[in-house]
Amino acid sequence: MHTTPESHERAPGRCARRRTSGARMRWLLLCVCLIAGTFGSETASMAAATKPSARPCDAAPTGVDTRNHFLRFRVPRGLMPDPQFDGRPARIQVHRVRPVYANGKCPGVANRARY
Image (cartoon, rainbow, N blue to C red; front, side):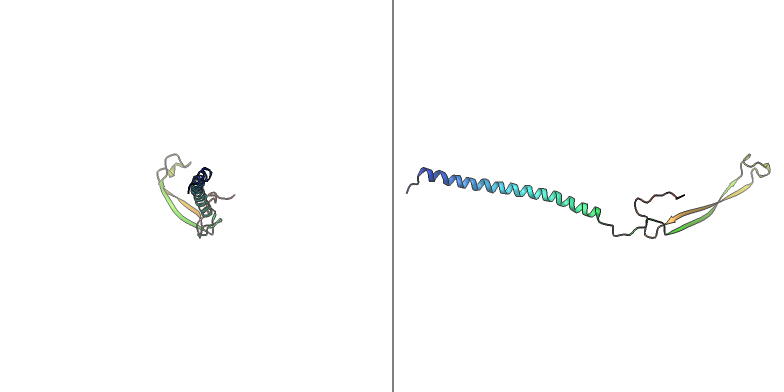
């Protein structure tokens, strides 16, 4: 028959609470997914950045490459103390030395020679 006003008021309230709790649950789930997605992608990229590279590298040279060649020129006037060499052809021997890395040089390895 007729419901009492008290029971009539409670029924919509319960239903409204369910709708609000459902909406809250969706928002909460959405926020959790967004946060997890943000941190999850950074964690994956951080793991990739800290993961050792698949390609090995050398911190020290494994060999030496040398090349020899000559620089040809004419002796300019006044370069030599003896004037008999002025204007004559000459050559200077250049000996180049460079380090060789069998697996490539590791990042952060200095490019200067040690003394």
